[in-house]
Image 1: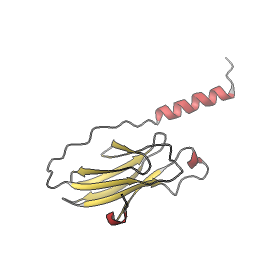
Image 2: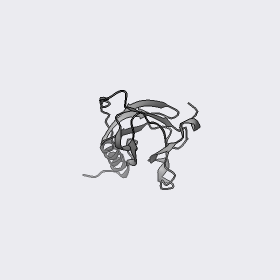
Image 3: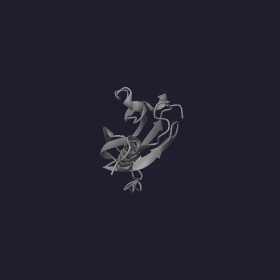
Image 4: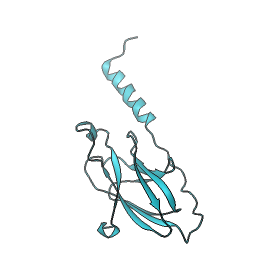
Length: 138
């Protein structure tokens, strides 16, 4: 069986993209709405990676997806959370936060500046970064 290089490349790319898919789960229920932390997440508007949505979650599940310049506000149960972010064919990056009752925090989802040059235009890596809420222009 003789496969052309283009066909092998197409099959390989399809396999990589299929194995990197991200599925979303339902947001976890808030046990005490009066104690919930408010988390605002804003997706930056960078050209690099602008064709892909990012997926964000915690506790080893992904709950939301954001396109460039979108934002969301979530109520999250207090406690230690490891927030994760990734795109379809991306590895995940993490940001660990200890949320206190009624805390308000803001995160920005942005292209990771530590991406591998050249590769990052094909498979962009993302990161979450905490910043003051008054610095976000929503």
